[in-house]
Image 1 (cartoon, rainbow, N blue to C red):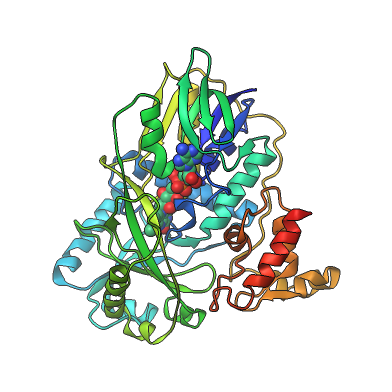
Image 2 (cartoon, rainbow, N blue to C red; image 1 turned 30 degrees about the vertical axis):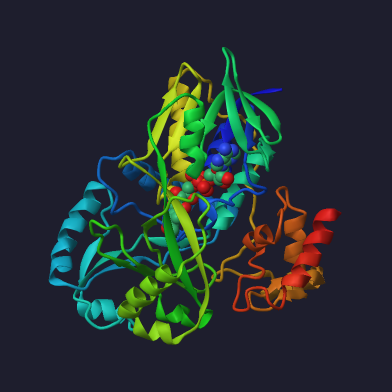
Length: 457
Ligand SMILES: Cc1cc2nc3c(=O)[nH]c(=O)nc-3n(C[C@H](O)[C@H](O)[C@H](O)COP(=O)(O)OP(=O)(O)OC[C@H]3O[C@@H](n4cnc5c(N)ncnc54)[C@H](O)[C@@H]3O)c2cc1C
C-alpha cells in the first residue's frame, strides 16, 4: 500500500501535520520510532502558549508562533485541552535590564503583538507579592498562557486517527530509497511507502534529511532542566515570571503549571547525546541559585520532581522548512523552543507548500468532530469532583492516585481510547497518575495492574 503522504515523527509538529493533511483527500501514514505519540521533546517542555512577543521579527518562526497561538487557543476550546490565560510579567532586576524593556516593547509591536505595557515596581509586587526583593520594572505580557503539552499532542494524534491516518508506533525509519513515483522508508516495522514524505523527526530530523541525500544542518540537542514544586506553592506564582532575555538566551522563568504546581527553569546546555533527558547535579544547583534570587520563599517549600527536555537546536536562526519537489520531500527542522505553540501553524504552512507544489489539498466535506479530551487541568472540573458522573459510573469515584486524585474510571478510559498508552509513562501523560508528591510510590503498582488489565482486554 502506498500512502499519498508519510509523516515521520509523532510529536506535536508531526501530529499537527498528519491531522491537517488528513482533512483533505490525501491518505496519510504517521510513523513514530517510539511506542507512543508525544514521547519526544513534546512531552518535556515549559508548556507555555507563547504570544511570540519576543520572537525575532521578520522570521518564519515569528509568523508561525503568532498564528499558532490563535489556532491552538481555538482548538483547545474545541477539544478541552486545558489552557489558563495567566499572563506573564517580564521582570528587570538591573538598570541595564530596565533600559531593555522599551526595546522589547518595540520588538513585540514589530511581531504584531500590541498588548505589552511597562509597569512599575509597585505593580509587580502587587501582582506577585512573593517575588524576591530588587525588581525595578516590568513588562506586562497579558496574552502569555499555560497549556497542557501532553493533551495537545494526544488531541492532535487522536484527531488525525479519527480522520483516517494510519498510525505506526514503534517504527523507526532506518533508511530511505527514493524512486520515481514514491519513496520507500525502511522502518523497524517493515517498509512504508509514500508519494510524499514529510520529515518532522525533531532531534532525528538531520539524520533523516541526510538519508534523502542532503547535507544542510546538524541538530545539537539543547537540554533544558526544570524543577517542579508542590501544589501548596501555586498561589505564590499567579502568573508567568519571565527574565529579560540576554545573548545567553531567555533565562530562567517561574511559572504556574496547568496541574496546579509551580515550575522553575529551564536551563540551556548543549549536549551531544540525543537521549540525554536525565537531570544533572549542576543543572539542579544552577536552578536553585537562580530560583532563590527570584523567589526565596518558594525554596522553603518542597520540590516534587525534576525533569529535562531536549530542544532540537540547529545552526540556523529560524525554522528550517523546505520542500524538495524532485524528491517530493518536505523538511520541517529546527523547531527548537516554540513548537508546542506553533505546531498547528506549521501544519498549515506545510499544507500551503504542498498546494504550491501542485498537490490537491482541498478540505474534505464531513470531517469528524474534533475529539473531546479528558480534562487534566486543575482549573476545570476533574471527574472525582463530579458527583453526577460518579453516580452514573462509580469508577470515577474510585481513586487510584491520591496525590493527583486520578480515578480508576479515567485509567480505564485511557486504556480504551483510540491511542492507548504503551506503558506507565504514557498512562501518566493521559491521566496525571503517579505525577504527584509521591511520584507513584503509593499508586505505581496499582496503576501498573490497571494498565495491564486495561490494555490486555
Ligand atoms: C526545555 C524546553 C522548553 C520548551 N518550552 C516550550 C514552550 O514553553 N512553548 C512552546 O511552544 N515550545 C516549547 N518548547 C519547544 C517544543 O517542546 C518543541 O518545539 C516541540 O515539542 C517540537 O515538537 P516536534 O514534533 O518537532 O518534536 P518531537 O516532539 O521531538 O517529535 C519528533 C518525533 O520524531 C520521532 N523520530 C525521530 N527520529 C525518527 C525516526 N528515524 N523514525 C521515526 N520517528 C522518529 C521521535 O521519536 C519523536 O517522537 C520547549 C522545549 C524544551 C526542550
